[in-house]
Structures are given as C-alpha cells and as structure tokens.
Image 1 (cartoon, rainbow, N blue to C red):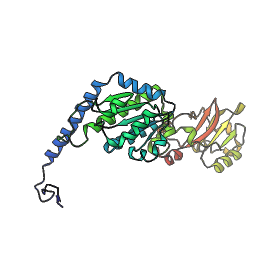
Image 2 (tube, rainbow, N blue to C red):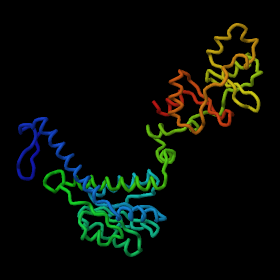
Image 3 (cartoon, rainbow, N blue to C red):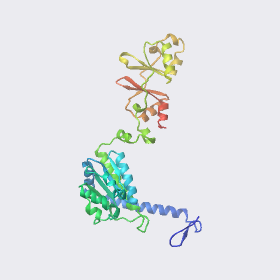
Image 4 (cartoon, one colour):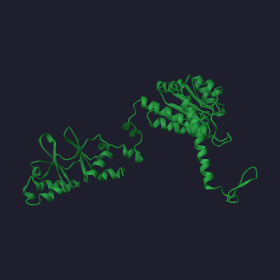
Length: 333
C-alpha cells in the first residue's frame, strides 16, 4: 500500500524497498546521535541540578509535572517515575490547567515544566500561576533566554544537540535528554530518601515485579498443620490429611518448631507407624524461613531441596506455612 505525502510523492510498495542494511544504518545513526546528546547532558550537569533536587525535597506537596505535545508525553512518564519511587507527583495538562485544573496546583507543590523551545504558548497560564502564588518552578528547556527559563526559580538547560531525524524538526534527541534528566532527578531523590525494594513493592503490588518483591509473610498461611512431639501418629496423620499441605510441623517446649513430618518420614517409619509419636517420626531441625524474607528466596530454597513447603519461623516459633503452589499463584514463575 502506498501513501501520498503533501508534496505529491509516494512512498510504499510502489517504490523500490530500501535494503535491510540501510534500515540498520539509520537505526544506528539515530542511536549514535541521541547518545551524543546524552553525553552533552552528562557533561553539562551542575549546581542547577542539585538545586532542583533540593527544591523538590523542600516541597511539602507534590511535584506537578507539565508539558505540551511530545514534552507532555515525557512529562507523564517522569511524573509516573517520581510517584513510583517515593516522590508524590502528578501530571497536569497545560491546556486543561487553563480551564480549571490550575486548582490542582497549590502553594505546597513544586512545578516541573518541560518545553524544548521554552516558548510553548499553552504553558503561559501555568507559569503565571506559579509566579502569582510563589510556587517553586523548575523549568527544562534548550534556550537559556526563553520565557520559561527566565521565569523559573531553577533553570535546567538542555544542551544544544542535533535531533536524530537529521532535519531538526522531529523531537528525538531533545525528548531523550529530557526523559533521562527526569530519570536522574527521580533516582537522586530516591537515593536521598533511601527508597528500598520494600517501599518499591508497596507502589508496585501487581504484575511480575510485584510478585518478585512479595515477602513470605504476604503469601503464607497462618492456619498451620502443627502437632506436639508427644502427639500419637494416629492424630498426626489426621492433621496432615485435614490441612492439605502433605506435612505437619512438630513443636516442643514453648511452642517452638523442633521438627517436621513429611511423606518421606512416613515411608521410613512405616513399620509400627501408628504406635509411634510425632517426635519419634519427625525430621529434626527442618529448613525454615523468616516471614520478612522475599518469597522468591523461599521458592529458590524449595526448588533447590525439592520440597513443597516451608515454615515461616520467628524466634523459633512458627508463624505461617508457605506452599510452593502459593508462589506459583503469585506469579513468581
């Protein structure tokens, strides 16, 4: 299918297709061009970046991120990254801001406004709002003398870098640099706040990432199969059957876990099994795990030792039981 462009030329199956090597060379040229932009951005970082981080840390409210067009798409991503790494943030569309959404921007907030030219007309009302109510404004643009950067409390200047399209008309290198700058801000803030994997899991409970960061305590069952050491095996077998885990834990003094009975223990003591006690049949010092350990670690132990259950133990006292099926249901595999 061919497509006719405004100049009347056609592109598509009616033209001779470019070779695969031509496409790859184009891709490499784009990547090299954007890489040069990132290197310039890296070299140009200075006191303004530190000031931007400190300005955000000093805000009691959220980071209001805004931009128009391609900068708006980048702004949405930066806001999402900030929010997921411990810095409350929200994207506000500049055009919608002019029609009532300025009410979302409070004196407690700090504004992070993106515009490659620094002259995007749709940003005017948002910029004026920050100046009127003395809301800290961090501007990101490529022209130091632009309206946005002149009005900003902190001006982050993007280096003069060639757009990857080769004609300077398609936002490519500039948006890549802006995105990288936003990531740099988010990570700097994250490290300052000592944001941990546990914090990250709180904001990412769904999907594969949430599963990988789940703890044993998140997945374990507190309705455990437990018997004391002096429990007759007739009763212990009933507990194993009723609870449905294929095992039972065995407790000694003060409810401490001293052993476990598995199907292997039952086979080894088949002769006279029903005349024995749980303490006589159990395997002592079973493999256990802490409730705050990652569920992924528990799964690794079960797979390594070819077992199906682990007791979660705290101060030698059983707190729950984790079955390998719980890990599978959570999406760990």
